[in-house]
Image (cartoon, rainbow, N blue to C red; front, side):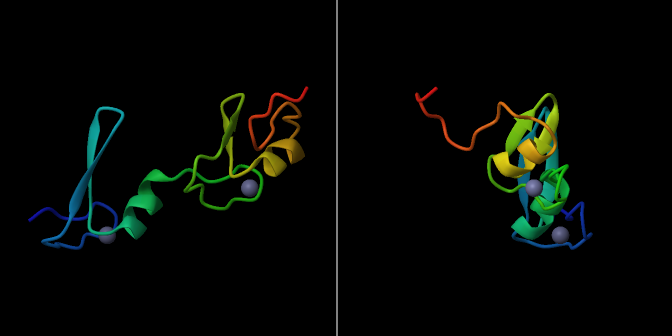
Length: 81
Ligand SMILES: [Zn+2]
Ligand SMILES: [Zn+2]
């Protein structure tokens, strides 16, 4: 059986995640998120959802992006200008 690359657990229900040409093996989503999810560069929380990217930086939400000076970012796509 494959061994989780985060915690080393040898688990028969482990699964693979294919990302950017690499294959990662995890025993749980907890470990997968620990390895794969980026951290918000403003508040440091784990970005599990879509997140917000601004100039190559990652944030959990538009609020954090704005706090770091990315003024053009909004949470939702709206036609209102
Ligand atoms: Zn694990
Ligand atoms: Zn944040």
